[in-house]
Amino acid sequence: MARRAAAGLLRRLGPLACEPQARGMSPTHYGTKNHGFSRFYLIQGRHHLYGSRTNVETDDTRQSAHMNFEVQKRSFSSAAAHIQRNPTYSVLNSNDVSYFKSVLGESSVVQDEDRVAVANVDWMGKYKGSSQLLLLPKSTTEVSKILSYCNSRRLAVVPQGGNTGLVGGSVPVHDEVIISLGGMNNIISFDNVNGILTCEAGCVLENLSSFVENKGFIMPLDLGAKGSCHIGGNISTNAGGLRFIRYGSLHGNVLGLEVVLANGTVLDMLTTLRKDNTGYDLKHLFIGSEGSLGVVTKVAILTPAKLPSTNVAFLSCNDYMSCQKLLLAAKRSLGEIVSAFEFMDRHCIDLAMKYLEGVQNPLPASPYNFYVLIETTGSDESYDKAKLEAFLLRSMEDGLVADGVIAQDISQASNFWRIREGISEASVKVGAVYKYDLSIPVEKLYDIVEEMRSRVGGMGEVLGYGHLGDGNLHLNILSSKYSDKILEQIEPFVYEWTSNQRGSISAEHGLGVMKAEKIHYSKSSEAVQLMGSIKKLLDPNSILNPYKVLPQSVL
Image (tube, rainbow, N blue to C red; front, side):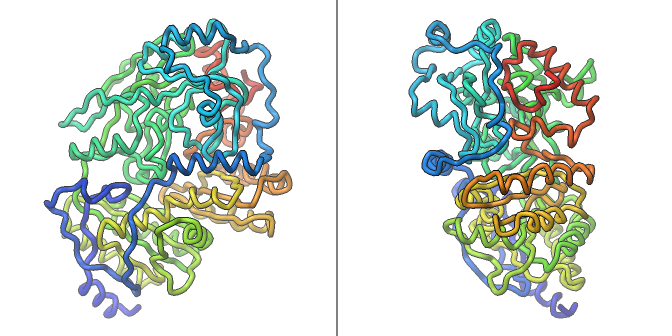
């Protein structure tokens, strides 16, 4: 586009200035101050109206996945299918159940087959355990008594939050006792000056988001599964999500934890201090350890201030090189106001349009190879608008952007995010999905998608999307059913390729049971051995989330 024509568009149309909580929030959550919306901004594009976003991973979605598991009788050749039960673990008996009832009460000790069956299966219907017991503690003291008893009896346990994980980390492999933290969902305190939230581990992320937003703050992480996932599970898996590019890792945002160790000891590290250099910072052992070292029961987390000006753009690019150049241009031109930079290939958009209800393609004129969603948040509407306009002008002149739109209101912004966040939900509806969460240098990130398409051929469809600003690729291979033939084309190639790029085989999803035996692709033998030593020190009977995170050879 010529500079004069591009400048004319920028003068004629203005971007959205709205609250950053458009995702997942109804307009009724906002007052009227500073919520005016400008006309629809258009870059060689068209005007479309869209419905509002819904949560990617809802209870209905999870129930559907469980039903699919039973109906299709999927056979997934994963590590879980070949792990032998550790014979040193005890088998649950009636005396155990009686003890748990004496501690928790009858209603918090669940043996009903249907309720336990739901907790035994992950939301994709991919991993299924055979636990006979679900415990619902409501306090740290109860968690402590459960673990102390299980340790003395050598009963294996699996802590469970919202069960929205993707690597089988939150469901039993065999007959482990399930400890659900959902009943521990109280907000303990909020520091209105410093934005420090203290709460129990069973709080749902979306509920916490609503709470702090009403206080003028936001949660530092945002996930597609925010309507179901628990903050304790987020911390235990060191979840990344959509705001990572702006606010960083939970290692930097979590100030304190309360954790119950395998023997029932309550480790109180629930500080709200920003600075504390007294000894080892032990909380970092439990952030990302997936419940294998201790059960997180309380959290103190730093929440950023809520900013009043937000823009959400949905752009298209002709090739992956343009996506890379656009990312660099955004960092240089938008700098501190960039809060998300997500990319999707054409196959993702096709999938979302086919399986997600209530969404439309914002750029339907012709298919593009790649799409980018950019969100900016700032404190000065006019300043942010000027920065965005300058960025868009240069991007169009340089040929980086083929087409694009910017949302004019909360509904449209929510639709843009619904497309991106709904890819995971849509992929499950195809039947079988092999999900890989990889951290790869940005310049090489899409190469593996193209190589995987060559390997899989007509046996499945390969999608590539993710957090380009973080170098985090979500590689999905879709098929009508799980099969060893497809898996042989995927593994171990996907791990070997990532290792050769000095990448990580788990950027944000964790290792769970899916990748426990694959950790050597990303970590040295010395590092893995040290991890095993820490595990044996804190959990000598190995009752906490067994068969997960670490290879059995080091335990």
